[in-house]
Length: 474
Image (cartoon, rainbow, N blue to C red; front, top):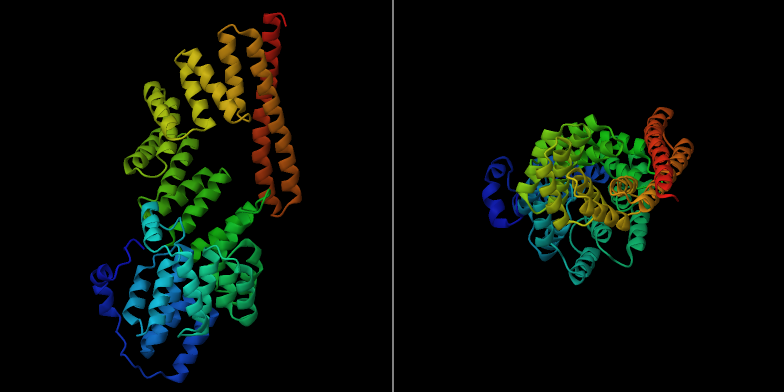
């Protein structure tokens, strides 16, 4: 996957592969029994099934099937975030003569790789290099309708195109493919991986082919993306199963790390991010997730080092890296460094969290005018920044601005009160929602811990507001 897909490059980097891969003759004799075995494995459709089909095609010297299985493995590897350059080399080496086959090769190269599969620079370069226009995609679809090769390959490639690109007849195309190949797991999987609305197809595939572990990754993502009430326990089960089946996928382990982080399972999140970075040392999403996780584990120096690494790499998440480096520097009392990094973060992104941190640092340095301005700006951007309202009240009290200070504390009181109310509603949804009782209890306990803290802040804000009102004679 880290190899730029150019024939010249592949010819040099694939020399070792060629030593182990016999190049088929131009017109191989196809054994009917071997062909039937290969086709059955392709229909079965799982990644390991396709690997077996490819090996069987190599053993049979069946050029067309060597090409088709390699091409399907490139597409599936991209979907699962697995390395795919070796499969692409196999496809290049076995490409049959004819324009249709060359088109299929271009199509699979144009399919997008999972965005978490590699360093973002590598994924972006591959995406830009192979990006196809709407007219090109329309032409490819015409070719796929009546081109050479098996209907299964052509249908799979068309589904991949319509699922990854904006086309008006997507749903019609998916429905037609599933109706035509309703009992073929390969096609049903590709339809199910298109969107959450097609998820039942994935469940059917897993029931028909128990080893079809490929389905767990998209099903995990669908569980995370359920509107209003994600099923994080189901997502965790799915991602763990996907990781067990495909441990070489950075996309899967990075997704697992993000899920653990959302669940505030910091130790597990760190392990997952470290696993992703073992596979891709410059994986920006994993690097940033690791910094956030280390920060919550109070491993401040490690988090600072991780943020520095992101900044040194450049291009991606530098604003976030400056913010988290400043956050950790503030917690180890490196105030000058924290202030400098917060200023850099503000130059790269404009959000409430950065302004709140900047306001805290200004307050720590007794620069009360600047602190008040930063905190007010944060609240203008996001009225839900309860901490900003509370600190703004503190700053104004120190400036003897009794009335406006009381107003800020009243705002903090309302903000924390609303947050407590929303958490109660969340607990009710968790209780009524999917998942095991153990999983629900864990999520509810997390909400209750936050509620306890926010209730204390709410009551303290109310007391401070009353105190300042008395001081100001309100």
